[in-house]
Structure formats: C-alpha cells, structure tokens
Amino acid sequence: MKILVPIKQVPDTATQVRVAADARAIESAGITWIISPYDEFAVEEALRIKEKRGQGEVVAVSLGPDRVKEALRSCLAMGADRAIHVNDPAFADADTLTTARALAAVIKQEAPQLAIFGRQAIDDDMGALPAQVAELLGWPSLYWIMEEAIAADGASIRAGRQVEGGLEVFEASLPCVLAAQKGLNEPRYPTLKGIMGAKKKEIKDLKAADLGIAPEPPQLSVARLESLPPRPPGRVIGGDVHEAVRELVRALREEAKAI
Image (cartoon, rainbow, N blue to C red; front, top):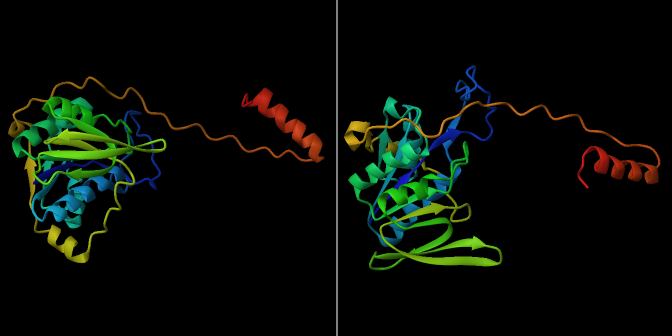
C-alpha cells in the first residue's frame, strides 16, 4: 500500500515571531523551522500502517522554498521511503486552494491508496487542505481521527474521531483522505541510523509544469499582520479581605465586564 503524507514546515512554537517590515509576513531571520506537529502524527501513522501490513511505501510531500527539504529529511529519518518537494517560485503566494490543487496533482501522479494529513498547520491554523484535496480528487475524507483500521483486502478503512463521551466511527472506501488529530499515536524520534540513511533517500523536485498545472492568482491573501498589544500590568487588591472581595467583584463587573 502506498501512502502519501503532505507536511508543512512551520516556525517552532518556541520561536519569538516578529512581523516583517511590509506587515504582510513574519520576519524569517533567526527562526527555527520544524514539521507542523499534527503532520508528525500523520507521518507516524503512515509508518505504522506500513509496518503492520508488512509492505508498502510512505512518501512525504511538501510545498515551499529550499529550506523545506530539512523538514522532508526529518520525515525520511523517521522512516519515510522517499519525498517530493514542490519547489517553484510560482507557488510563493499560494493560498490553501492553490496548494490543494498542487497536492492533488501530486497525488494523481503518485496514485496512493491513502493520503494522511495533519488536521491543521500550527502557523495559520486554517485546517482547510484535507477537505479541499479530497474534493478535488473526489475521495472521501475523515477528519480529526483518533484511531484507524484498514481492511485486510485494502478496500476500505474504519476511523474514529473523538466526540464528547466517546468515539464517532466512520467507514469509507479507499482511496481516502485522513486528517490526524493529537492522540492518534506518539511520533517516534529519528534514530542515528535513520538520520544517516535519510541522506541517501530521494527527494524529488517538481515544478508547476511537471504537475501540469498553472498557478492561479490566490483568492485569499494576507492584508496585514499586527503584533498583539502588550498585556496591561496586573493589579493587586490589598487591605481587608471583605473589602478586597467587594472591590474585586466591582472591578470584574464594571471594569473588566467579566461578570
């Protein structure tokens, strides 16, 4: 079974993000880049499916500039068999729909039985790609899955997503798109052997022309980014306890409008 895993390289959650001078992007200098954590769950699940079935191929794919190869190498070090890098300046301002069209084109070329996404990227939190790609392919899609089981004949999949009080279980035919949720698994750490082996694995570069598509002007664009305003200093209410409580309630009601 071939499984394709789209991943996105995002700023580390510990990175201090600064707005760039044009106020339409973040300042990239000094940023530590990582694989979006939800995508790590997707990679891990693909590897587990391959290991459980005893055969198959896991292919990682991503769009972006040259630095994205670092994220793809991390996927290869985890155990992915090969990677595809859609690296074309024409996609520099791609919105989710343009990205979805590019990924759908890659999937059509690769013809996997399963595509596993992270439920959303942690930088823009859009969460739109899995459904958009599934719609473009005409495949069923199952979101926020917490468990999955593929039929022995590889024709269908059962997946459960967490709801209040239990799991909501769905069954879909393959090929299918899944969106992985935290709790689906525990992503493995690359071993030294895996890191060394990743250097020998293929990362295939593709341009828009290789996919047979012409990027269209984005339908969604960033108008402006603004830093959060500084948090006002805290206030300590001292004095008699009873008076302090009355003052606190008054402040919450009249000033903070919290009650």
